[in-house]
Structures are given as structure tokens and as C-alpha cells.
Length: 425
Image 1 (cartoon, one colour):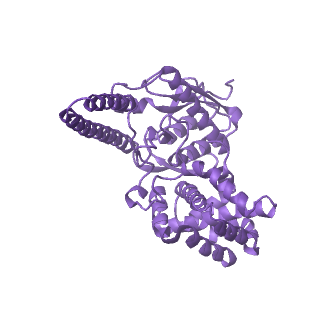
Image 2 (cartoon, helix red, strand yellow):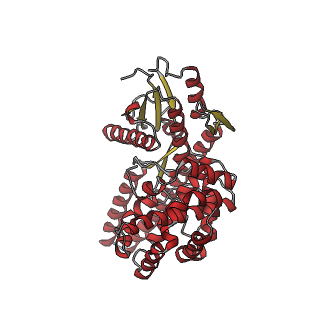
Image 3 (cartoon, one colour):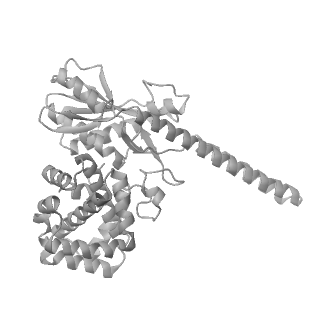
């Protein structure tokens, strides 16, 4: 994902701060990272909802200019390990009702459920995200580059990107949506490249031309009915209702099939286990997931071995449908892979992107390249030297499963990592 306000704010979180926050809350660093990203996005989204309210913006800039606001940046490490106290606690306690009102409880529960945290940890994460966001804006305010007006403009311009970090419905008041990862709606869909822990569904692309064809048929029936007796118009209405029911059933069945496929694939990754890296770091990963397989191979071949034919498929990445935008649920696996690559600094890798065979082959190749580039960009942002990586899109070539089934197509929509060895060029 390209550099953004979210990237800049989350970039202020050091490994020590993340570990300190995880230790204080008694949660895993991966869950804390996911929760903090979601809580930070929710904080920015809440502010963006009020970006046209000049009174609200004046209150925020007033908070940033005070002594407590200016001291937030240096206080972040102590807030991570001990929670907000004194002036920082006052700011947090004033900010939360200003921005979220009665939604605070729903928001914290949603963050906790999405990241796999306890409810108490959800509130702890939110109370870390708020000073993190305010510290970033306080730094801008201190430099003279932030006013109420410019803050409003910044929040409005960043709102679409911020929304991509949020589970659908997190701030909408729908508990059934809050508890899930991003789900399919009529306007925003998500697509798995191998399933994430709480999988979602996507509408098959063939439904779009089918819907267009149905609309043309409906228009033709209505035009015919206008030049004849009323009975044909009633028939057209009946056809419309039946077509709507059929389309709804088709979408529902397809979504259910995709969800069931993703659930089975995630369950097949096995129980969680600890994996220790050469640099002493421990990762909590599925026993049959790609991280464990990759570490096992690299322990036997710390320089990458001969490489070439050693491919390892990511199994918990999530992209927007037909886009190269990674969803927040992908962050845990990306962080794990980055940690592994940094622990084996001699290894070079190629990141391969693949699609199923639905749609135009040229478009599929372009999409697979953009997705491979996106994964490489994320790993670079997480500290992996970009000179050690290349990215290539293979489109619908080299399928690993049958494209005639939804399960097979889902397996073919994938990102894989090829070990190229220490001397690869």
C-alpha cells in the first residue's frame, strides 16, 4: 500500500512499544498489531466523520497546542507499557466521547473481536491509538503545518484509504458485522488469496454480465408492455420478481460456497504453535501454515540452498476484489514473513502473483503483477531489504487446482514466495 497518513502514524510504533503493549495487555504481538492498526483507522475515521465541523476541528487543534498535546510524542513508550496517565489520560478521556459518543463500547468490542483480543484489551488498544494519532497531529501542529482547516482537508482526503483498514460496519452500529472481517456488500467486495482466519465471501465475476443481460431483458419487456394491454406489463413484473429472487439465491449460494471453502482451508492449517527464529524472536503460527514450512526449510538451508524450485504459498492474505489493496487481516502473516526473511539475511526471494482463469488473461496478468508488487512493498515497509526481492505476475498460468470449481479457483488466486538462494541475481 502506498505511503499514507495511516502508514506515517503506525510507523511511529517501535518494536519495543509493540512488545511493551503486548506484555501489558497479556496478548500476542501479532494480535496487538492488528488491533492497533484497526483502532488507529477507527480513530481517524471517527475524526473524518466530523471533518466539516469547524467547532470540532478547533477543539482538536486546541488540545494539540496544550502542554499535554505537545508532550504526547515523548510519552508514547510509557503509554505503551503503562497506559495513559496524567495529562495524556485527560486527553484520551476527553477525546473518546467527543469522537465516538455512545459507540465507544461497540467500537472496543469490535476491535477486540476482529483482532482476537479480550474486551479489556480492545479498550487498552484504543487508548493507545488515540494518543498515537494525537501525537502525530501535535507534531504537525508544533511545526506550524496544521490548522483547523488543513486538518479537516487532510482527514477528508485520507478517509477512503483509512476505510480500507477497517472491518465493514465497525462504526455503523451493526454488531453482526463488527464481529467479522471485511464482508461482501453490493458496492464493496473482498476476495481471498487463500483464506484468512475469519473468511469472507466474494460474488463471482460472471454475475456482473449476467445482471446486465437481465437488466436489458427487463427493459425490453417493459417497452413491449407499454404498447399493448396491461396483462403483458403484469407478466413483466412477475418476470422481474422471479429474476430478482433467482439472482439473490444465486449470489447467496455462491457466497455460502466461498465461505465454506475458506473455512475448510483455514481449519486445515492446524493448531497454533511457537516457532523460534535464529535471531531469538518467537512467532505464533499455524502448524501447517506457510511460516512454519518456510522456517523448517531455511533452518536446513540458511543461505537458501539451490533455490529455484522452492515455492511457499501465502495462506492468509486478503485483497479487495479485482484490486491489489491488501486488507488489514493480511498484516499478521506479512509481519511474520518479514520477520523470517530478516532472520535469514542471506536469502533472496521472488514473489509470484497468480489468478484464476476467470476474465481477460491480459487483465489477470496485470492484476497478478500489481498484487505481487503490493506484497513486496509491504515486506519492504516491514524492514526487508528490497534488493533481496523481486516480484512477478504470472496471471492465470501455472494453476495448482481445477478452475472449474470455486474451491479450485480460490486456490489458484494466490501469492507465492520462491527461494532463490544467496547468490541469485
